Image (tube, rainbow, N blue to C red):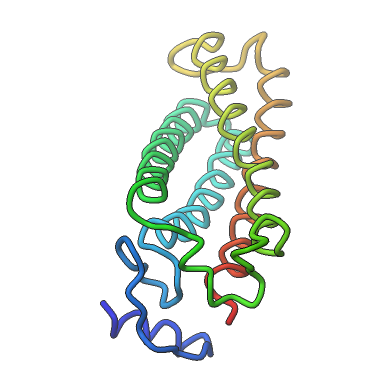
Length: 186
């Protein structure tokens, strides 16, 4: 695994530092992030791609049932990823130790350091996004027929789904910013 991590780091022109034994399983992207941090970084790129594809399927091709299935799959994938990520962060890995080598993190002033502030901004996107996506999915399941088709709820669904999509984009971009500030920069 270390060979793969070093190779990834070299490919994107990052300096490879000495191996440090952090708590929890190490990531696979070649930086200081834990395994689940790296999984979430990659998963968010996939989520944005699938989400965009799903939106195009319903907007351009009017494949409502396919859109429903994709969104339910995304919702389940995100639920599992968030649960696994939280278990990792709460019980196995400590992001503060992994971020200690970053010039953008100060353990004494962790919440006023750039990495700490970026995490707070990320959480301001991530937490409402989870709530909003949950509400949008539940409302869609309650108000649309099966198989999925347009109805009286369509206008409201479009509004809140677009807000949810923008929130997901913000969650992803702020998450990637935090990851870079905490685990890539050195």
